[in-house]
Image (cartoon, rainbow, N blue to C red; front, side):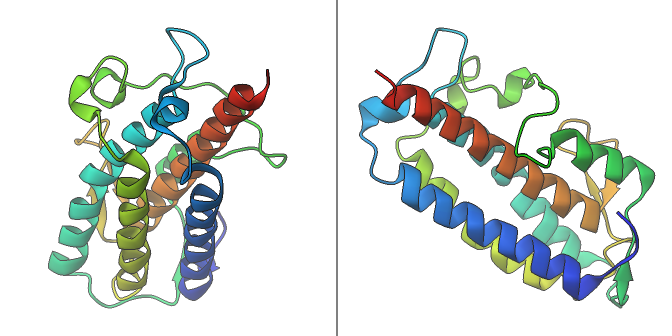
Length: 193
């Protein structure tokens, strides 16, 4: 991402997050438990599994982001934001293509795979996800009060690797968008007789 005004980045993230929340409410809120847990085959994820995976990411990132924003010494925001090469690579790896296609498949690690890790199971994955989306929206607004480039956040997959806060927010938003696309694909298959 080229240099971008922080206000533009925050607006972009806010619009993306609101759009995802609306899409989830519209497409998944009224599904039965049977529909939520339907899978194409034993190796594929159900709609519930997709949201359990996303919720695990939010469970990690929301407190990390809030802690970094509250405790950063870089509490003087800049007017513009520029991604780091590593951050750009991270969020591009999960970003959907221009025609909303998955450019490359990624395999979830065991701790974030709901088929393997039973601790990710949830009775109400959609409601939990929507609550995390609300928290993420508030967090995006708070983030513009700090330096998005100098405030660093550990990656959930490799905590020794740190992204700047702006790239980490983009990573989580694009990762979420990618999996909502996946859930919609499962829903389309469920509806096909």
